[in-house]
Amino acid sequence: MPGDHPLAPEVVTSGVALTVDPPPVPPGRADGVRRLVPGLLAVAGATAVAFAVQHVVPGLGSTTVAVVLGALAANLGLHRTALHPGTAFAAKRLLRAGVVLLGFQLSLAQVAGLGLGGLAVVATTVTITFFGTQGLGRLLGLGRARSLLVATGFSICGASAVGAMKEVAGGDEEDAGIAIALVTLCGSLAILALPPLRGLLGLDVTSFGSWVGASVHDVGQTVATANRVPGALTAAVVVKLSRVVLLAPLVAGVGLVRRRALAAAPGRRPAPLPLFVAGFLAAIGLASTGWLPAAALGVAHTGQQVLLTAALVGLGTGIHLKVLRRTGGRALTLGLLSWLLVAAVAYAGVRLTGA
Image (cartoon, rainbow, N blue to C red; front, top):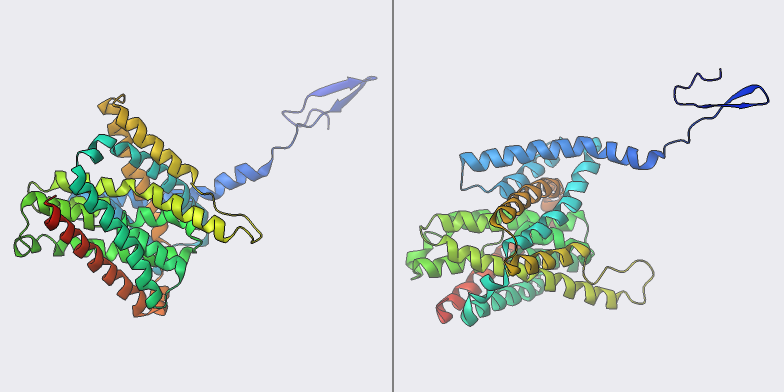
């Protein structure tokens, strides 16, 4: 009947009323957003739990708890198909946004404040761990992408770095899941293992903080470890964040190498520098100007913590125990050897330079 549609205007032509139906709404985007909602709600709930646990048990960082919650959901059959689009969105898109905001925690003045000795410790530790871990991975018979992701996580900043490097590494969810599981395990063990070693290794409080910052993987794990020795936190955070700066050149370098390797191959080549990594560098540059008020930097810091925690819930759903069992002891061996490598190189650097 004419006019039955509540939004349908009537056009009168030769005395006959014609109903003009409104143009249909393209279903693609709206349906895509609706598909994200269940998973994002689950991620939001897990993120809230992660921060609550951190508040009750300060030694457990929200990011570590987030990875564990995601892995539990995956292995207990709670990560249902309806949740996958939302958790995948968190693992990819929210991670990128969190990495960009991480740049606002850094400034070139902080990096320069380390001095030549501190910068040498950071650069040497990252370089030897990054390439040494990949070499160990080849000796153990692990794939190139898997070894690369483990090397990135242990040399830079844990699960966040694994997620960032996955963009250009050419690995799959299984490779990323194994790398994240290893850096989470070893970084959590560091919180317990490193503080009792300070006296045995002859490190004063500042040197211990520098050692922790140069060797522990995730930013949250670094803070938790250093907090166990009063006075060590400042040195640990400055050194750790200086390591994070090297995430951008590492990702860019791997991207360029892969583009050249795939130059003759059909298909889409990885970007030499992902857009979010460029955003990360821009954030560092902006923070270095001193133009941003403390309140704005505080908001960026809080946003970064929330986004990375949410992203690590999503990344945690990619950790499957059956995959770890199938890999056998090789992946675990690589993780433990990489942990020993980064700790030994960082310790030698701190003792030699007095950083």
